[in-house]
Image (cartoon, rainbow, N blue to C red; front, side, top):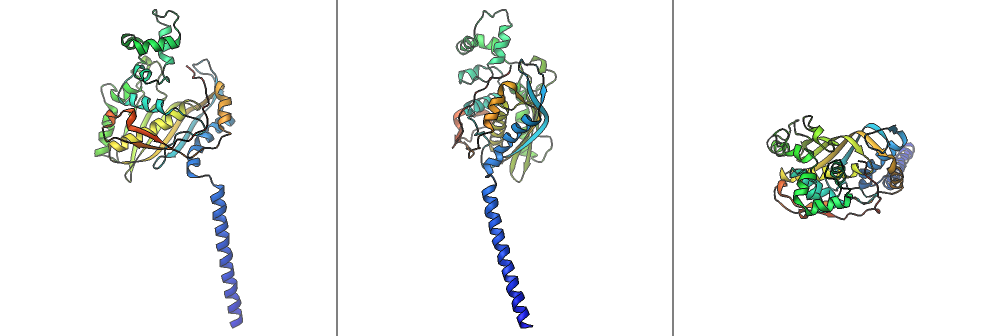
Amino acid sequence: MSFKITVLSYCKNSFKKVIRLFCKLKKRFLYNATPSKFRRVMQQYLDLARYVLEHGKYRPNRTDTAGIGVFGYQMHFDISKHFPLLTTKKVHWKSIVHELLWFIKGDTNIKYLVDNKVNIWNEWPYESFKKSPHFNGESQKEFIERIRQDAKFAQQFGNLGPVYGKQWRDFNGVDQLKKVIAQIKVNPFSRRLIVSSWNPNEVDQMLLPPCHSLYQFYVQDGQLSCQLYQRSGDIFLGIPFNIASYSLLVYLVAKETNLKPGSFVHTIGDAHIYENHLEQIKLQLTRQPKPLPKVVLKSDKSIFDYQFDDIELVDYDHHPTIKGEVAV
């Protein structure tokens, strides 16, 4: 009997050792095989691009550039410790920050952007100017230089209509951004923490109706999160900007409301790749994401008074730039 117990005890202990060894090997294997957190975060963007390449259908559109697209796609980004700025190509951080500050200030004229060497909105006012009786064959470069030098000309021809900034700060008389910040402070669990850029009364007056149409804040455990609904998403040029822009908005609003950044949820209606971006997307898919950067807010001033130098991007390591033309 004693011999049986000894044998059983030995077998039991040996089995435990085998299990422990297996667990160690499994843990090591999983650690080596599983992408690091930063890679998983931005892998979602590459997964979106790959999904549209594989499943997208041909879609005609209002521009002269056709493309392929899918309807309905969602990504979740943890922004509590790192900032989701794409690393598989260089994304122009200066443009992202200035554009967001431009929105927050309620501005809709490209002069502020032009003065800060941000050119992402130039095409639409220029195309509008070309249709006016004042157009005398000026190139876009000449048009932009005149916007920079001539305030009166900029006031007349640099406006995009009642786009994002107007709707955020004056939606039929309502300052949505200021109101939602006040609501976060007094009623953080409200399910009505919403800002809409889509104003049916004014959408026809906009040179480009809002692609990112509506966003909602959500507070839990001292963290502020945001979900964006984007009716139309240009995967190569637009989506990387939108991910970063709304994540930065969360950082700014969180600081304003004494919260910490939580997550950014990106819901896209028509997610598309233009045909003149297909090769660029394929190139991106050959690249491995790098460690994500961080963003430091260096000022305690109000969100409405923030300047570019108050926001610092730290440790942004990226692959080389990939150029692509915007579809107007």
